[in-house]
Amino acid sequence: MKGRDLYTANWSLRYPDPCPQQGSGDDCAIFTCKYMECLARRDTQGLPFTQDDMSSVPARFTVHLIKAYFNAQERSERI
Image (tube, rainbow, N blue to C red; front, side, top):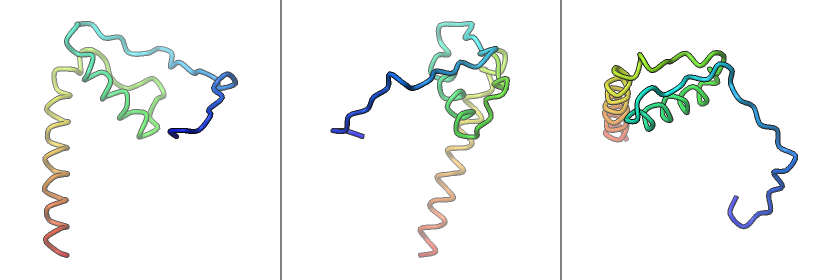
């Protein structure tokens, strides 16, 4: 969208209610990633995560990234 005029004055803002709240100062990146995952899946009704989930989220993201890497490697070998 670089170089284009965007008129955002008429855009509506929507805030999920309730919105998960970060409990510690160390989880902001994980909360952001989890929130973006919910948006990508269009699963924003009630945002199904809390501070209690944050201890397992990095491990699940890591497994997902490793699987994606090996799936990409496998596809490139077939070509």
